[in-house]
Image (cartoon, rainbow, N blue to C red; front, side, top):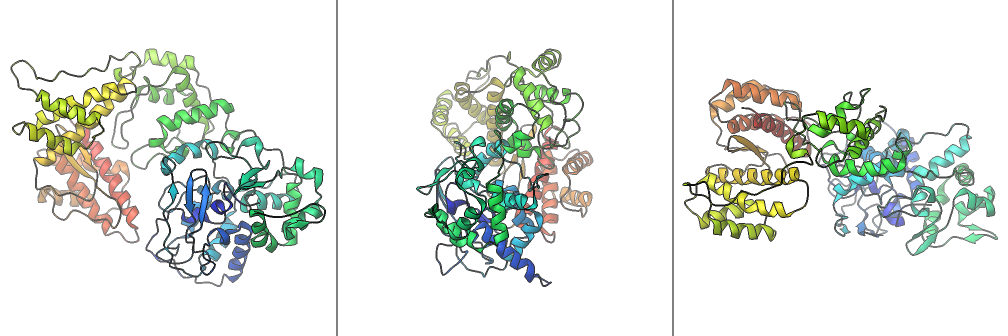
Length: 640
């Protein structure tokens, strides 16, 4: 009764190290005698059948490398020994807990549903600590992990947003009132540690277990995992027979185990106590009929079909910024979970923001209007969805009629309405008496863009090669004129087309601006670049490796000194609103300074403070500087 599409794919502790992003920090050596905890953890690891899936070479137990087949490609189990380089020797308990309970690996990426973190989420805190005590003592084996062989688009982990929103809530196992201790112990072993449903239940096209089909059987590794729902078992089995089968793999007059289940018995179930096996049998013979809806929908006030439909609306329009589980992004995007503005008695706050959007301020970035993209019914459903999800308990009292009234009476931006003007492109040639972009060069660029070339730098170079005397503003106009027809021919609402054209034009302005400042280094951190009267954020090429602060950047020394004095030695990380306040204050004190220099002076200073911070991993350092820099740049972008 062990795990997922492939038994190997989902066993044990695969969640812990999927696609490792390992820390170089060494785990602290234990300072107390916790041998009893380690022994208990070893028992729990047996119950979860961890070792077989993480062992391809019997001489190197737990060192990973076993090929695991899924409908979406091949995954390879990973090294979970205490090796510091290729194993999990640098993990903390919190890293371990987050992987098993939340389905999020150490570097923040989402785990695939093939790993049964939806079952492991039920493991209690005490058992997680015991498992960790055992796992961290697995002898180190230096065995590099193999790259997974998932096919596109399944190799893109961001696609897990939709899966998690629709099918997953990280809830620890809770006993069922009115049931015996043995029944509840069996439920815990079957549903959480043993994750029996992962082999014995069919899945939908998204890889989630089908609601009412729980335990009703599924194909696994070329074998058929039989129906073990209570209705089927109770017809042919009694508790003693089932206990004997689980312990030995054989029940006289019934069956003998074979295929993947034989390994489960040999490596896991045979080591469990008689009391635990009896508890599992008690539960399996009396397991409740499964719910028709996934866990997130069971706690929703919305009808299942409305929930499923609106969850996809949320994923398509909101989750990229507000995040799955509605947590938002610190210093950039406000949370929706437990937000008083979201859970107010009336839904007008949510309706207004969806229809109108929000301007950027010192705390958060701008949000576009969705009035032109979502119907009145979709806006009402979305308002009710965010008001009743992720622990929010507000009334789902938004209606399409309410949205329609607000749409008529509010000042909804033109670019966000369905009555917005058609998306038109300016004609190339310039105003009367004024030279415009080179029409032939623009046509050539437009053909290149339509053919798939989106490399702004190469497009700028191509136009400058065709028109070497073109002023910087004319180069930007030329690229905008070339890209506009491509955008116009694409799909989407008008406001989306305007947004794409504006983003492309800002990139072109940034590139041209960099070319007029040849001394500007290729900085390894977020960087502000002038774009006309505004700013754009120039992102670093890579966030991998140690944080490196630019040593020689063209920022006036006096401005850097002023930034250092203003910032002081803050506690890390500086909150997002504080970054905006600092940006405005430094700009006000230096009115003649370029806004790009103001932003970069603060970024450089803060980078130095973060680099000198004790106990920070590189990923944390990059995240702190990136978040601070984006907040500073976004604040100054809207300054007059």
